[in-house]
Picture 1: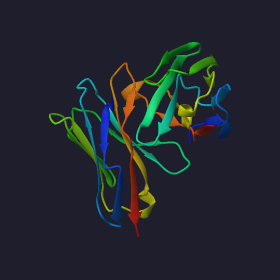
Picture 2: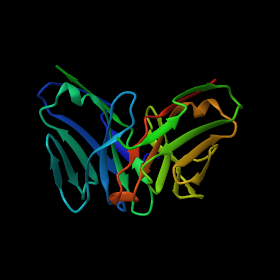
Picture 3: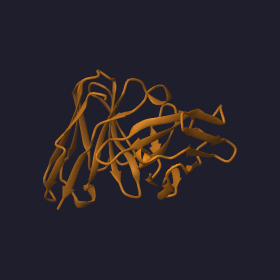
Picture 4: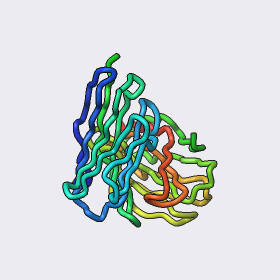
Length: 111
Length: 114
């Protein structure tokens, strides 16, 4: 059973547009929600993360929106660039347990 | 980039043969992990280690064993490889656990079991 559900599976966005990736979870014990970015042939790398005591976190063009009551969180990439083309994974962590990753979203930004 | 080296990077083997993947780190991080990445499943934890000779199972540990005899090395062994173990395997390390410890991933080992 997938602990973290991620959508869409793939996303195509024009350069300058907004990319939005959504994730949902059921386990209310999760208390840390990172996003990882993976380029072809490379391992994932931490992009941005949020804890459930805040509703939004922004780092440059990347923003996480967090809705604790709905048990959903999303990644917004503003002014998307071709260099943002990668696979994005959301994840959730339960203190003392392990990370659970979403199934990934392949983002393509068209010039 | 975190100092993580996985070997081999690519391997093709036959069903029933043993396979060992190696992860070597130069960061002296306490925690080491083995994940597998499969389309439609994302990243799933196989085993992890929280110190030398201290290991525990993840969500997909069946058919895999691990060993950590030194801080810097974490080995993943498939005793008798099956086609369902065809995957890309990632090693990760972290200095601390969970929300105070970022996961740093290696570049992956692609295993094909024929």
